[in-house]
Length: 324
Ligand code: ATP
Image (cartoon, rainbow, N blue to C red; front, side, top):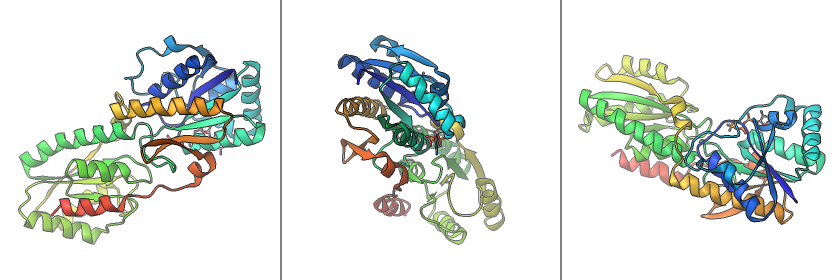
C-alpha cells in the first residue's frame, strides 16, 4: 500500500477532524501518501480528492464537524456509482480506504470491499454510541458533556420556578446519551428506548418525587424512547394528570452534534486513526477499529454493522438509586 484515502460519511460528530489528522499523520509517519476525499462517497464518485500532508491538518484537532465535509450518497447505493468511485480511486493510485462514519457508511464500505476486493477500514464516528465493537464512538463523550452542561443550565431555571422540565436528547434508537447524561446531570427520571417505563410508572415516579419534597425535576427523554408519546404530547399528558406541576419542554437538538471535541474524543480519534492505517499496512481489511476494555481492537465490519449495543444494566440501577 502506497496511498491511503480518507473520508467522512453520514452524520458528522466531534472528533472526526482529529481522526482525519491522525490518519494523515500516520501515513506521513510511515512514508506513504494520503488523499482526502471530500463529501464522503459522493466525492469518491465525483473524484473530489485532495492530496494531504501533515501540514494540511494543522489546527483541526480542536474543531468540531469535518473539514472533509460529509454527505449521504444515493448514487453509492448503486453498482454504477460504486464502479465510478472505484475507477476514480484506481486512477488516483489510492490503494486503500479509511471510512469515518456510522453503520450506514460501514455497510457501504463492506459492499465496496466485497465487490472490488478493495481494502477498507472503518472508524466509528457518531454521537449516538450505537455501534457494536467499541465502548465509545467518536463524538459520544463530547455530546455527553454538552448535554450535561445544558441540563445544568436548565436546572437553574427549573429550581428557581419549581418547574418540571422534559429534556429531549439525541441517540436515535439507543439510550446511551440519555442514560449517562441523565445520571451525570442528576435527572429524576430517564426514558430510554431499551426500557419502557410506561406512562403510569412515570406519573407514579413524579408523584413520589413531589411527595419526597423535591420542588423541581428534570426528566431526560431519549428521542427514540418507547413510551408512545413525543415529548410535547408527554407534557400535555402530565399537565392533564398532574396539574400541580408546571411542565416545560426543551429539545436540545443539533447543538449536541457540534462543538470542540473533548480531550477523550481527541485521544480516541488519534488512537483509532493510527490503528486504522497501521492495520491496512499490515494487510488487514474489512474491519472497524474501536475501543474494547480500554484497548484499541479490531472488529469485522460485518459484526460492527449487525451487532447491537446493550445498555449497561448497572447504570439503570445506579440511576434508580440516585433518584431516591
Ligand atoms: P449516521 O450514524 O450519522 O446516520 P451513517 O454512516 O449510518 O451515519 P448513513 O446515511 O446511513 O449514515 O450512510 C452514509 C452513506 O453510506 C449513505 O449515504 C450511502 O452513500 C452509504 N451507504 C449506506 N448504506 C449503504 C448500502 N446498503 N450500500 C451502499 N452504500 C450505502
